[in-house]
Amino acid sequence: MEEFGGLEVEPISLPHTSIKMIRGISMEHTRRILPKFKAWADKYFVISHRNETRGLGGIFFDDLNDREPEKLFEFAKDAANSVVPAYGPIIEARKDDPFSEQQKQWQLMRRGRYVEFNLVYDRGTVFCLKTGGRIESILMSLLETARWEYDHHPEPGSPEADIMDAFKHAREWV
Image (cartoon, rainbow, N blue to C red; front, side):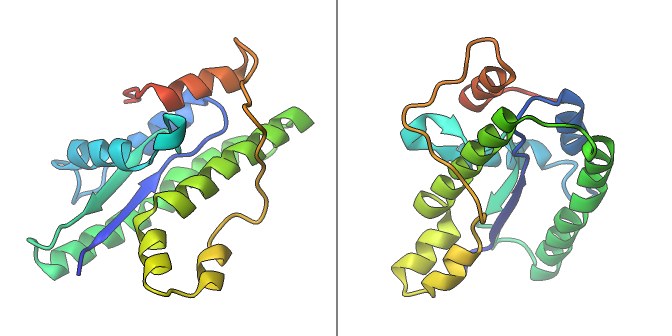
């Protein structure tokens, strides 16, 4: 049995401080191996047919069967327990920010990219589909609303164009 999992940042604009806050999380079990898991995430969360990433990076790990199960479990718990301390301050800081209809449409298109990745590339989803998994369970894990627009290109110089550049060209955020 392979062990795999990950966490990724998927913003719709470039709030640099939010990215740095997520990347700056220092979990006890990952201090030495975070660069390896970050590189794994940068390689794993790619939507190849669009030549872009699903988000802006995070951590991903798999095939860790050479480690003790107890240590893997502790690592997985630490990774999961880092989510609320990372996202809580971001949500608190941005929860009352106004947004336009154009920004909402962009968010829905980025959600569409999440759906594309999960249905085409995600290892867990692909495994379930190939082995007779319950399709309802797979589809229920997707976002309730998403959008696709044919051959969409953000307006040059817009916040959407800036983040698309980041999705297409890996960056170091910390």
